[in-house]
Length: 195
Image (tube, rainbow, N blue to C red; front, side):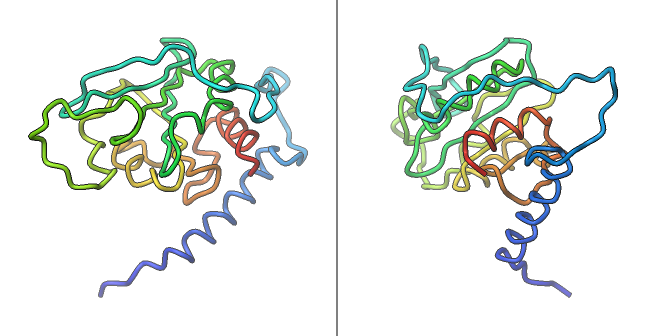
C-alpha cells in the first residue's frame, strides 16, 4: 500500500524537531552539560550585511558545466557546501562563509546553473530547467561534506551529497535534525539567517 507524502506535515515536524534539537544544543541559550576537556567553538560575531563580496572567484570544469564558485577557509578543513536558491546567488552567504571559515571549515559556494559565472561547456548540451540536474557534474569532494542550501536548492543538495544528505541543514530549518551537523556549523547558519 503506497502512502502519499504530506510535505506540509513534514516541514512542520522538521521545524519542531529543529526547535527541540537546537534547544538541546544550547543554540537558544539552554543550559547544557559539557566535559571539562571540551571547549565550545568560538565564532567571530558578524553583523548581517558587514561583508559585501567574496574574494577572487574560481572556475572548475565539472561534467557539462564550467562552474564558478567562491571558496574560503582551510584547504584541508571539513568541507561545507552552501547553495543558493532562486532568485538569489552566492552573495546570500557572504556573511556566513567567513564565520564557517573561522571555525576551521573549507567553505565552497558555487553558482548554480544559470547564475553568475557558471556556464555550459557546449552550446549543444540539453537543457531541462531542473536545478537538480547540476548534481552529477558538480565539484567532487573527498570525505564528509555538510550543506546549507536555500529551500530552492534542497533537492540539488540531497542529490549532490548522496549518502551524506542527512547532514543538510535546509536554510536553517528543515527535515534534518541539527545534531547531525556539527554544532558550530548549525550555530553559524542560525546566527546569519536569523532562525
